[in-house]
Length: 166
Length: 341
Image (cartoon, rainbow over all chains, first blue to last red):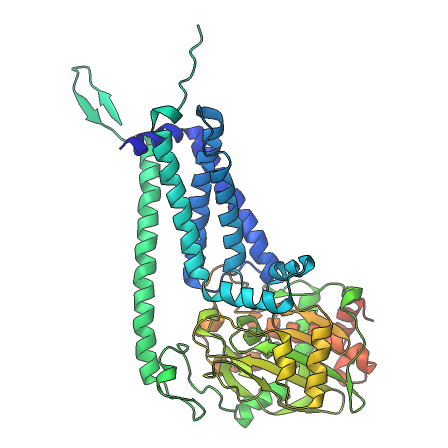
């Protein structure tokens, strides 16, 4: 119940708008990454299609909590971890869901010395375990959301009270 | 949220944000539930279909086919003469009309039309005095599966196929009906199907598809695998040539005369560019695809022919525009835009 109260404290209209903005941002980045891989915005696997949206939603909630934490808590505990995990899972997830026949983004790793054979092996791995990887990313975000809501519910990290003007 | 009334009693009320948060939770829960149900019904459907499908004689074991693609109907059987004729004897006017539609930007499917970068222009690969079209793909690949229709149409303008085979991309990669260049082994753990039944006085067609069970997603091996397993010196040289370009970024990976193409030149999965995982092509039979190519009255057919036009425009300059198709006005205009004229 404490976590829900904290969540409710965070989700004022302002941070609800921040969440929507984060969702749109992640969606646009994912769309760009997938389109640049396959020429069209196409996720062939129907499960991955829906999981992608769930991943973006969970990552956007994580990012919203991170942004909130920066400005409103005594300790900015979620500043680095939550924001970076949120961004990495959303971006990496976008690349993974589009792995398959055409993978120019993945093959750009050749520029840093990864061999063609290694990249094909990596592509096969991502294609084969895409659902499992994306589900893992979703759970990672959910765990972070629960973890930070729990932390933010404790007195040591409590949410600052707004100073009243005299 | 709790709120006190004027009489001091507490009651719960839901604000708009509470409702929105609850709605998000409900949507997530319903999505997970629907996905689970769909996954379970899919597995049940797979079991049923794998029992009812008729398997061709080249299946290795009966047990190994249990989880294969949802459709195996007619897989690896050659097209009959009527169906083959639709590919081999497509009217040039279809290519012209589709090319004009591509140039007028009235196609709803994605067909690549842009200037060819200098880095994609290489020396032609000659065998027996003729330049070559080299194709490296994978039978599990959806984009190869979709694009082979355009490739077959393009190649038919420079020669003819004495046989083409019914195939499908992998179940986890669209399960789209396609053409196989040769009788591919869709049950082997790994292998390559080299060769085809194509002949031409203008060009050679050198093709290799990576073979794997078409039950999950996309699978491929490094290009060195294609080199090492080549059936003869010509194929070994062609595969080495493709590997040596260092331009591989996925399949299909093709070479048309002297233009290297990384990926499909068109994405045509139905009468419009798909915006979800539901692809119309997935639910079509080979007969329906061929019928649309023959009737030539919808976006799908125009898109496939336009994709063929782009490949034709890549190839024509290498043979000095000597094939009749190269003189079509639309092909000349496409070549001009690509910087090849």
